[in-house]
Length: 379
Image 1 (cartoon, helix red, strand yellow):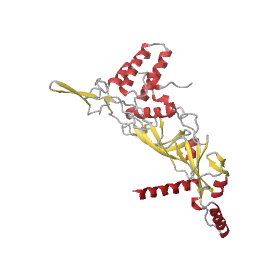
Image 2 (cartoon, rainbow, N blue to C red):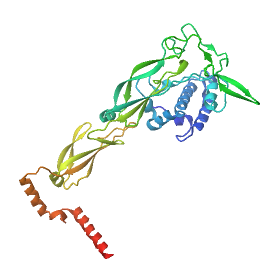
Image 3 (cartoon, rainbow, N blue to C red):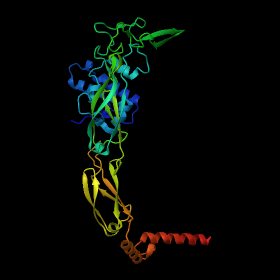
């Protein structure tokens, strides 16, 4: 079943500013929140859709990817990388108000653990791989959640304690004259807790350095500068927070025969003088094999021939680009005496380089040159 458009879910358009998106989310989340609709499965499903749309459209990188590729930007073909796993199924009302107004008003709550950093991996593909699609395995170094303390940073059997300076809130209030200023607690760095007995494996950070191997599904039709996002495959968050994302940056290598422009492919096909004049049939390459191309008589160098459906399939739709072949008439080289003699005779029969009947472009050009100099002499 096709997923709904995120903008339609929130009742906004694709040019809406982030503030408008947050307002729409707050209004809908309050209406469909499970706490206000106990036992209503349809309301719970609606709330999940709303939160999913909100998480994507308020993240600039994810929104840009969605605007360009739609839901396909987040599909990787296995459950660990699917788009849905970046969202929780429930949220309290404080989270809703905090997401919308937390950047404007301090709410005095304990600061949340820090999410892991996003990572970038540069991947080079051949044109064939980019056009047909492929699954690639990549090895990346990253900070992963400690498997001994499970990201808590505390030694097994011990727990983090509330920070004595801020009493677990992560914020302290300093009075300055008539005003009270809220600042991040310098003792716990805003986490609200102190680790008295750190884990020896990760030294209290909750993260360790590891290398991991991932399978990346490259969709057919991808191009240079496109990105693939792998959800939660970035660095692990601190103190058990969620991981960041991994962005695979695509570069397509230069091809010896084809050039790509959007979903079309271009190539140059050399033909000899006699075929250009008399016509004929040649074989031209495509990414799927050879096809025959009919060259009509009197074909000029630079003529473009279109072979429909032999280009690149769009990454977003089923439309297929075309292959455009530009013929280049090649001047013969290494001629023997007999061949040269034949060309001399042919040239004479054509009336020289300004032959009116057989070289209409040449005649127009030299007639234009004559008028140009006649006009100069008239001044």
